[in-house]
Length: 416
View (cartoon, rainbow, N blue to C red):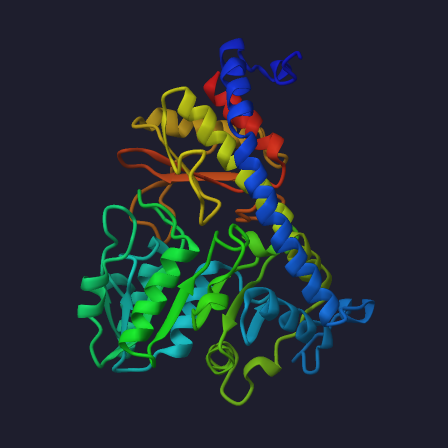
């Protein structure tokens, strides 16, 4: 069969690598499709169980009292996430906002927040108050202490180190599922369950909170279904299915989710307010499509790992490793190659394909960052995007890809 990518400037050498990758990924794709099937059936069952109807696609404005569509979507999402309650709102604009709100809602002055997965993602540093310039308004400014335990070299948690730091003041143990801007692997459900069980066996009253960003629907269960007390994430990442135009969620124990809702709105109002503003259709349809969208993202990541691996470029995870998120890292060890790959990602995008991304001083990040994202929804990482800090070893963090062929084209053009 001729190479359909040749008209896009893909060289014969790159096409040859691509054909080898096509063969290598077949058994991995079958595993992804099985997980997709399990998740899709769970999602369909939740919609059917809660009798979702045309009535629930309407809009509310103002205070949003008695928004039956919003309430129904939250009931469905709670079931899907294995949680008692979910708070799914279009007004939450980022994963960082959702996670930050979760922490402000469940922590009080004098408490300690203990991270079991080392330093969280850069954008959460301001919430924690880890630098002088971000102290004002941070958790630290409210008298909430922070401590952390690094993961072990194999990516598992440091059981002895973590348990030794659980003092009487520790209120919340925090877990970040995805890798962030680090070289470590994403945690999988067995990793997270091990941490949850160890913490709850030590002290059952500790709240285990999970940053679930990039991890939803990559496995056949979500953190609250195997013991997490609360988790949070963004609707323009995995659970929005590439359809939700904004939004975020908090899911977990009913009392904890309501505490977060009171922080976001006001005490006495909590989850009762917050109009859907006509976005119930996009949120509901995005949730329904999410397992399929995430499977496409995973296929793109697996193909990239296989093709770059054949070409001798180090990637993490390897194409045949089990995955806990949709992020694929490609380690270029060269600034120009990182910048070039981001340019190829942008050039293969449906939006702003003619634009060339450049490194810049992005708010919330310690180093300059280059970002490629020709997406229909700004910042949506289930759509194909790539970014990376401009520092050695010059790692590209590739994620998303609602259309597998888009990722494949960018990879092959980069190899060319």
